[in-house]
Amino acid sequence: MTVRPDTPRHLRIAAHTELISLILMLANVFTVHLKPVSSVMGPTHGCAYLFVVIATWRLKPAWAVTVTALVPGVGGLLALRLLGRGDAARARAEEAAPS
Image (cartoon, rainbow, N blue to C red; front, side, top):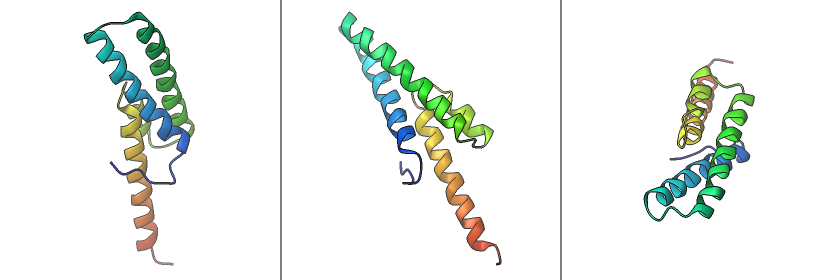
């Protein structure tokens, strides 16, 4: 997945943190189920999820991007992808428009 460099850095970091924390949390639950890991990963994932949703909402993108950000785990990465596509489409439209 390519992410445009002009997307907000904090949103990219939070989206990746959300996914990684979910993977670690689920791996812990389905294997050894260590309580200390759960007590760290649960709040980490929850905070990253809320951060992604709020950060996406504050960008005021199309409603589809905001709704996509609500998907737990991968919503942030999907929203970043949609934001990148929107920026690319906007740039193509500006190039094609007569001056």
